[in-house]
Length: 281
Image (cartoon, rainbow, N blue to C red; front, side, top):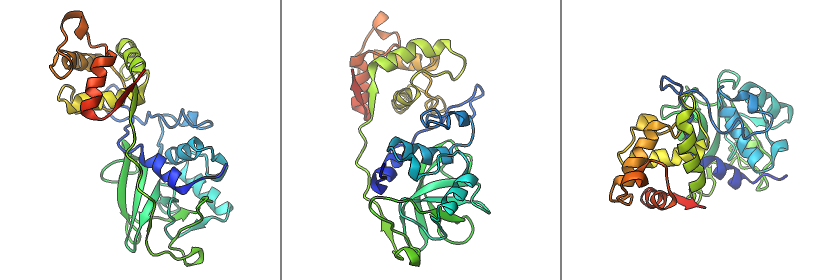
């Protein structure tokens, strides 16, 4: 299936702010949504996932044949080279690879100019680490220390835009900015997680992506410590925090059994209205 550069970059950028899980000691653990959601890469759960993240985007758009479906940056570089689609110049919408032979880290370029590439990356952090905790948008140097080993050249439907003189020599480029995403949360899923997750082993999850949205909202409301707001598990601390939301005036001023920490649609919609998500079902 064809692959649109704009659609591909924007689906990755829509995940900005997503975080992997934590272990029982509160440390980031590489457990994330992209490995189990990418057929053939389920085995990579718990490992470095920067390459898996880029493969996930292509798979989500039905374009597996146009992207290396691998969890290895090294094998991804080899895939692009064997396809004759690798360059040392930035490629709009293309992957960049860091390391002596591109083995250390990968992200995707959504803009570039004479000096910098503007990227979206999984398994990094605000400092640009190769082993980070989530999806970030970053700025990296085009040349010198910290610059990429090279770039893949995807076969986008819009054609190739690259600083490579052999590929057009476009000096600066960027894709259209993504539309603000509509964050959607299922009330039924959140309630199910609130009932199930506290009984699981530490960090156990039911609907982690949706729960993460609610946890972040509870943290912003000052009801849940930020350290516990990104694991996707609606555990006992989240239940207590949600009960506090239910009891608050903004949450509906519920009392007794109506403030048990199990989200109902009305109180959840109130939280979403304040903190930017839409409740469905």
